[in-house]
Amino acid sequence: MKVIIVMPLAEQRGGGEMMLWDLMQQGRNAGVEWLVIFLENGPMVKQVKSLGIDAQVVEIGRLRQIHRFFAAVLQIAAIARQEHADIIVNWMWITHISGGLAAMLAGLPAVWYQLEVPSDKTWLVRLATLIPARAIITLSEDGKQAQAQIWPHRPTPLVYPGVALERFEPNALPSPQEARRKLGLPLHGPLIGIVGRLQRWKGMHVLVQAMPKILQQYPDAHCVIVGGKHDFEPDYEDFLKAEIAALGLKEQVIMAGLQRNIPEWVQAMDVFVHASDKEPFGIVIIEAMALGKPVIAGDAGGPTEIITDGMNGLLTPYGNADKLAIAILRYLDEQEFAQSAGVAARQRALDFSTHSYAQNFINAVRSVIPSVS
Image 1 (cartoon, helix red, strand yellow):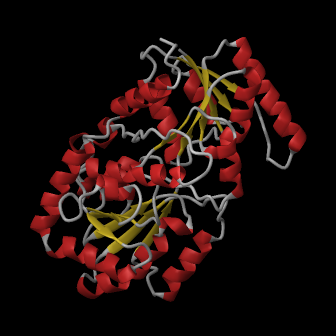
Image 2 (image 1 turned 120 degrees about the vertical axis):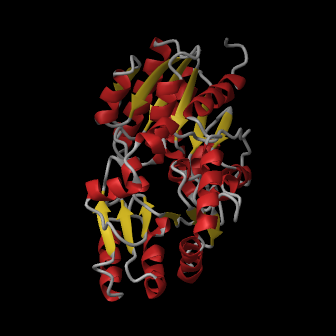
Image 3 (image 1 turned 135 degrees about the vertical axis):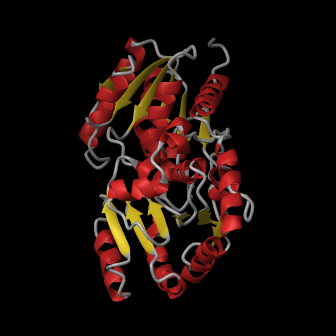
C-alpha cells in the first residue's frame, strides 16, 4: 500500500506535528510505502527523510492566493499519479481542501485526520467536509460526535494518538530535584506547571488566576509556564505578563518560553495542569501521566477519555480558577492521594503507545481501500 500524506506544517509546533513524526517512526515496517508532501519547507522535511521516507515540498501559500493554491493542487495530483499512490491522507481539515481536490483529480480515494473538535459554524470546515473523503479519522469520541453533526456525513473511525513512552520514563530522567537544579527552577516549595503553545484556549491565564489561592496556603509555591508564542495569538503572551503583574505574581510565576526537553521540565513539576477548553485530545496529558505526575485537566473533550476523575487524575471546568485552585490544593494537602493518583496515571499512560497508535492508524486507512494488501 502506497500512502501519500499531505502535511501543512514542516516545523514541530504542537501535538499534530508530533503525531505525524510518531507515525513515520513506528510505521516504517508495517507494509506501507509512505510519501509525505509538505505544504511548506522546514526542518521536518529533513527529519522525515532521515528515517528513509520520501518527503517532498509543494509550497501552497494561503487560500486567498488562488493561483498558487490551484498550482499546488495540480502538482500534488501529478505526484500521486507518478508515484502510483493508493490513497491520499490529509493531515488536518485545512489540508483536505487541497489534498482532497488533488485526490479527485488523480482518481484516488482520500481520508483526512481531524485533529480538532470541529464546528459546523466554521465555513472552511464545512467546505472541507463537502470534498469527497472515504473517511474522516478522529482522535477522540468528542471529535467523532462533533464531526458526525456536519453534513455530508462521512465514516469517522477513531484512532487515539500515542506517546513515545520511552522519553517519559521516570527512571531514565533526573530526579525532580535534580531537574529543578538543572533547569534553574526554585529548589524549595511546590512547583505547579503547564505546557503548551501560548493561546487563550489553552488556559494558562486560568492557572495564573488560581495562584493567589495556592499561595495563601503555600507561600513558597511557584508556577512555571512552558510554551512559546503562537503566530495566531501573538498578543496572548503580553496579556499573560500583564495578568501576572496585576496579581503581584512576578516572583512566583515563571514564563520559561519554548523548550525542547519537555520530559525534564515536566519531571521537575509537583503538579501538572492542563487547562485547555474542550481539548481535542491532549497528548501532553499522557506525557505527564507517564511520568507519574498528579494531573489536572479540563472536564470536556479528550481529557475525559483519558482521565477517570479522582482515580488517575482530576478534572475541572475550563475557566474556573477557583475550582482549579481547589484541585491543586487537594494534591498538595493530600500527599498520599497525590502519590496514588500518580501511580494510577502512569499505568493509564501505558495504554497509549506510539506503536499501537501507528498500527491503528494504518488499519483505519487500509480499511477504506480493502482491495489493497
